Length: 510
Image (cartoon, rainbow, N blue to C red; front, side, top):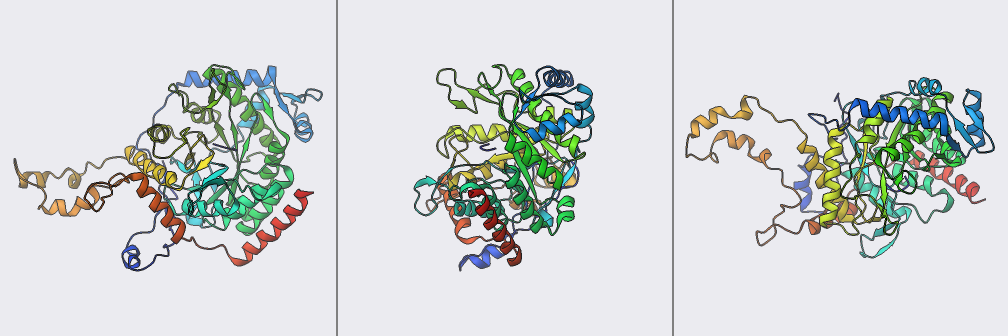
């Protein structure tokens, strides 16, 4: 993860790619890709109500008796005003259960994430799962030279155009860091986002000053503060620190965003045996306490502020201490989603990605596929899913295309099946009869094209054999990078963002 139903708003028309002749006429007939969220025809519950309630009670116990450290004097002062018990010396807040429960009841279960193109708005809580990429990688395999190097803002712009094109990606994450932009890098990442996609942006902005600049930028894109509040064109991902610490920059940014109506996803990353107990339930209890403590503060100060919860449980290899995302026993990945829903807030599942150092490996396929299929059934509202290898640090152009293919396999796996008269084909079966052949039947002519959706693994080569899917994926990624451009940001808005960034660069360097 790096730094980290009902009617769907899925009709996000993509702008037709600019393509060279002779392909132009052919491609002009291809429908523009639409956002295609995960629409489960059925749901799976992995944990019982009794288990979730036990974890909720454990969270309340931790908050009341152990407390959470807030490294922000401002946050401690606000909590004290609302009756939370504060130890200023230890920077610790202990929460009476009645305050926690009352505050959490104010958090909304449904809200809108706006986009530059309103047809790409996301209705959080509509029963669908909307996906994005991994983030926030620090290295890229260069599109042109195929050399591995540190990522830049220009790289993020390139990858953002691929995000905009892919129907698996419903909202933007900074897949790569703008490593060449200094202290204001998080703001430059937003600028690269708004200039290269029409979809919703979820930034990773920390710090009160940085958050104020981000809100100013979002206000420009939205068309004013009230429109930003009504259709927030950005949200923000803010991490806590396990165990049981809320850092100054994160929570003070969250307060700025909540005041402006910008949704916040709080994410925690408890690592079993190091920053959390070595048991899964204990790790989730610690992570839950962090998320709830941060949410309570926002609800006390700004009742109804939209918040999502995300728990990314990880492991420490007992032999080396190395970070491990995908051990053989990866149980409880769905627990974060179900626990968020048990608290009454939407979830942004912390799943997918891969520890594999390379794309196209058995490991990369297994780790992304298993997580995507499970996440598709668990009912999470938002889902980081594809894009990076090497434990969320490295971008290969072909890997995001391979991930897109896995995503659509998972999407189809959970869709309903039509058993109407036309689909059952009883008339055609009777007409063909035993030992017959369906190829020439009119029913086959009506349905044959839709019967098989070729995967990236089934692209024929000149010799008739299927091509290497990694090679196909690389070519597709390079084609999108070379040819596709989304609708540009209005010139006046782009200029306004540049002016804000210049001010931010000057202040944050000082």
